[in-house]
Length: 297
Image 1 (cartoon, helix red, strand yellow):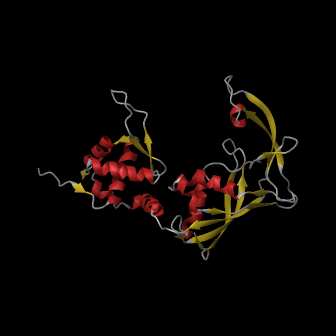
Image 2 (cartoon, one colour; image 1 turned 60 degrees about the vertical axis):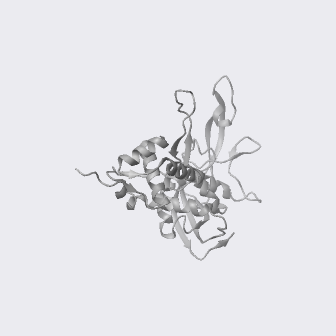
Image 3 (cartoon, one colour; image 1 turned 180 degrees about the vertical axis):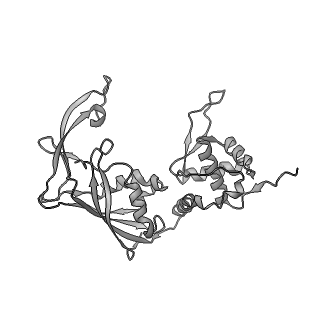
């Protein structure tokens, strides 16, 4: 039986797609393992091409390097793993059948985007503005202790209104961007506004007791991670609203897909003070898109 002709990648993007797919299928892969996997699928790629493409992907923050495995001489073996993007990739018979698969659209968009943002001279982004009113679920905790040791939310200058600073939303976005196949390092292209809390009638914040451990307080001890005592923590009532706005590059998340993306991110890391242990989550309730916003950098 005549052997089917090996598939040669027609351009750099196809090589990058093939390498990303191979790495994700293997988990953590060395250059020889990547080549072997691609050849198993009927593809043809040289060691030099694989090394060059893998390093380009790493410099664009799409791959990371693992050096934990050593050879028989005790020298670390360079292996690559996917840093942020995770895709549901079907079983592959031939690499030529997968490079144009529509399921790979998030990967292709991120490959294009990461390459574009590395180019010199890219100065202009086309932005739109998303105004969002969030409901809340669970306890959105405060951030800073007052003079009585109660961990409270930030207030405005007059001390009358609870606010969230722009970096609170930025940190939350950064933690949850991988859920929508976007790298956390691309957070620098987004802009965030301060958020304000709107109460329903005369509702006020409540207080809960939170047991603080050495790990939670940032205190390290050779004696272990024993308790540091209970703290009073201010939490928002569940029927209040948090109102804010984001400025998003159009090629990062399209306006028509922003609501879907935001809903997915809201299922990820919690929001509020002590978010590593918090159960507080945002719920998008009203989103208004203003597509006339743009910014030149």
